[in-house]
Length: 101
Image (cartoon, rainbow, N blue to C red; front, side, top):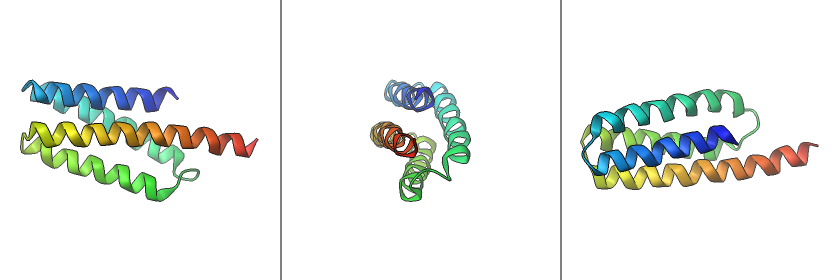
């Protein structure tokens, strides 16, 4: 739902900020997305496939390295992968919740 979209939107905005050299804004957006992800992860850990959660955690760790090194191209690419993975997780959860009904 909305949390996935908010995280995804923040990641895309962070990537766009990095590509224009606005690293302070990229840092803020990335930290916001990561905090939202942590809160979501704590809630969803009992329902979600941990392989997917671990993969997304790995992307966040990778993004942190690229952000710290100010590598805008690699950072934008990993933010895009994160956005796709989080949106895919949302779709998977719709199926999970539907199957529980």
